[in-house]
Length: 317
Image (cartoon, rainbow, N blue to C red; front, side):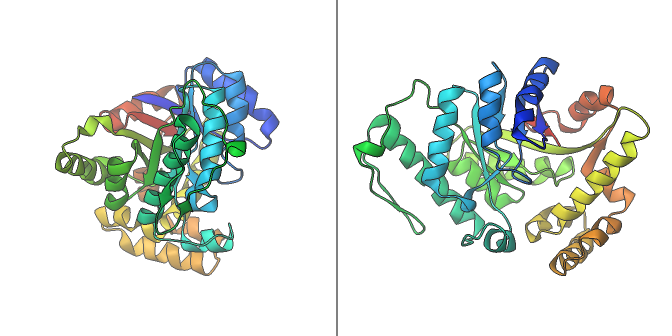
């Protein structure tokens, strides 16, 4: 199991030092999130200043940008850091896509499927000289003149991982993706009891080997260097649990533990814009279930005990 660090920063100029520090500390990878910033620019900064660690979006919202733009960006990063880039794609709630990104929303499973296929078509055109040909319900990509088609790069490998927290998205990841990215809103038992079972069942149906599907999980961690930092970290994670848990797509996770009522309550508060009240609804019992609490020196041991054998990579959030 590899350990990655979530990349949190205020300015892009801070990314090189943060990335170098993560590599020096022994982290296997870094992952910037699409929350406060676009997740792609920091990967370019990190690629220029690191040597071995892998770097991946955690995640990039697919329907917030066109598939050809995603293909261009990922390919440019692959040219900078061959074999180190992971493209993790996810979706967002309809309200966010339409009212925050200003883009049309579509059902997550077909949208992610068609986007991944379109990206690969653009890569095949640019790397192998194939005719650009991708026709689907959402996209019609058929035009690529030589003026816009660059030369091949030495190592164009960029695995596509699809993000999700429910069986339909897990099955899709095993069908057309190179792996599954699990959002941090889960309990340690949820991936094994729900998502991994969906992947394995789908792999057997398609005569595939389940272990060929890369499994990446992000985990909420409550840690700190002293007694002052631990409570701050705890409340920050509590707020994130409340925010993630308000999304209707997280209903599978709530249902596994018969906590659907809390999910509905959080969704109602989010719909009414009562953001400050949401974290107050998350009791300590549920916070502990959705996060890993330990001092820094004990985090790795707790992760291994809770997740050994489930994900191939774990990202500490």
